[in-house]
Length: 163
Image (tube, rainbow, N blue to C red; front, side):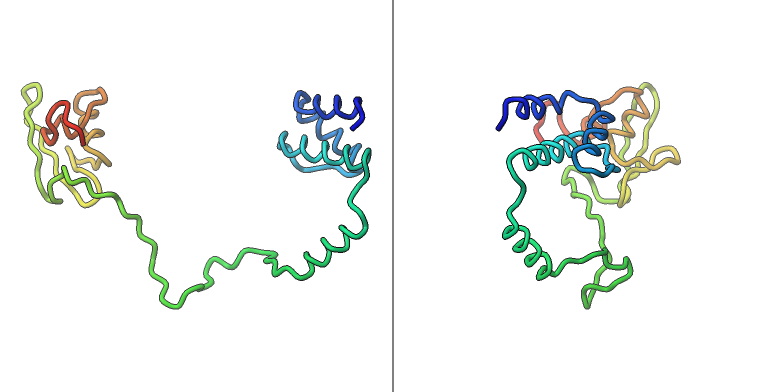
């Protein structure tokens, strides 16, 4: 590879995207819609090398065209309502079950700064004072104003215990 070509390729990553887009248009003969710097650098470097050292051989071009013609390529995504399986089941999000938590419907009670706190364990989350929270830690934060372990705050885990 020529010294000046190697220097130019090495300098590409230091250029701004606008400069790379302009250089791409010069080298490739067409503008690009891309603003991806890494992509632009790779394409410009490849094109510069191909011009300096020779492009693909005609034989390689023919073989690539044959492979492309034989490929079973999807040109568009399947419609969203297309049924790809016979017995399609709706996707469900499964939350990991925490064995430290009591069953849904259980009321957790705790005294804190003279107040009696009651939190109901739900199927998905926890109910406290008319609001639903995703975690016990969120409930503990709402009560104390600071982040702390909800399991520890409500006495489900001893201090320093590993989960």
